[in-house]
Amino acid sequence: MKKNIMRIVFLAMALTLVLAACGAKPEEVGGFQIPEVEEGKFNIAMVLIGPHDDGGWSQAHYEGLLYVEENVPNTNVAYIENVPEGADSEQIFRSLARKGFDLILGTSFGYMDPMEVVAGEFPDSMFIHLTGIKSNFTNFGNLMGAMEDMKYLAGMLAGARAKQDGETKLGYMATFPIPEEIRLGNAIALGMRKTCPECTLDVRWINTWHDPIIEKEAAASLFDAGAYVVFTGADTPAVADVAQEKGKYGVTYDWFGSCKVDACLTAPYWLWGTEYARITEGIIAGTYTPGYDYFDANTGALGLYGFMEGQELTPGLKDLDPEVLAMVKDTLAQMLAGEFTRFEVFTGPINDNKGNVVLPAGQHLEQVDLDAFPEFGLPCSVDVCMKWWAEGITAELPE
Image (tube, rainbow, N blue to C red; front, side, top):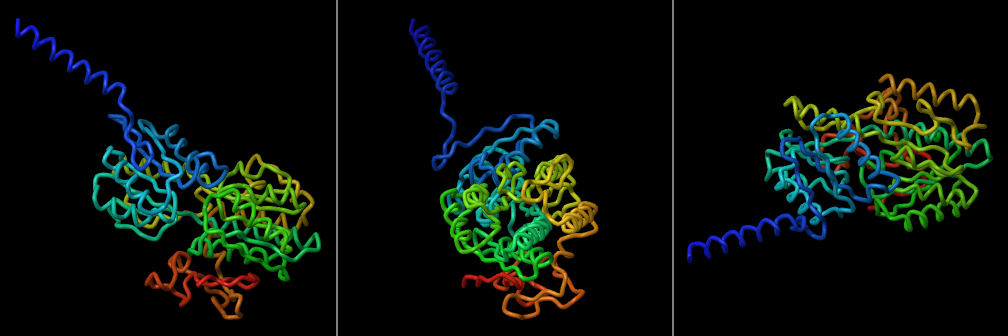
């Protein structure tokens, strides 16, 4: 009798545990739900700085992740959105590694140091960081692309649009004073002066990657200060919405679908899917070594809205000087063929906005010059690395 009672009690306890497990809440860390891996599959997790549908940077990465799921067999993908840079992100990366994710992607500059720490703790997972400057060459690497190519072309278009309409002022809404943002601002200015030597570029630092309210306020500030075309380095298409209200032009960024209103002149954008698929396939095959992975337009991972296959010119470009349009199309074709790269964008003569020679004629910057500040201690070929504003930019760099 006692044995039967004990057996019943044991079975009841076991059933309770099974039911509890079935109804168990997913693991949460710092308010973020940690996804599960799928046994027998190659598991990929992406950490996003903003919402996956932000209409910009995060959405472009999210769609790149879906591309991998659709095109690389036997993969399982997951993402966590709106993760702040810093300590919160370190907890998330550690939790994903503990779950057993094979590849963890961190898509913001401020994730770099936290990812480096966690990669050292989990050698069996691969960590790829976007936009940074660090790698351990074993399981922690860096991935970035030459968006300066597309920003240069967009600068040519914006300068020509302003000049044709009797304007000379442009604006750049920059996020944080890091090499990436300065490099892209300089590319815009170099392109601008190609078609409008008399044009100037003002800058507003907004110190955020994703905040539609701040982005709109900064865009309005630049337009009200006289800018005719304003570029954004942030994640949403707010700049074009403000341009629509002001009767001017905005250049959106990151995602091909961001150029929705008539006031959007163009949009330099990313197509991350092919690069993510290449890396995933390499890891699965055992042939991928992480390092400093920097791609150009010939990979097909960069685009300029209005100029890619199947796209039409935006309203703001249709009446632009045909010679300018032909020059942009020709340069883009060279970029897509690998004949015009980021190094051609940054080929001298180039002066800074203080009258100093950054590069004499015929010389070009090296990769480290594009990525670094002097304080990083890297061997830049020019003393200033990427800590300078190009001629035509009216702003000062923050201390």
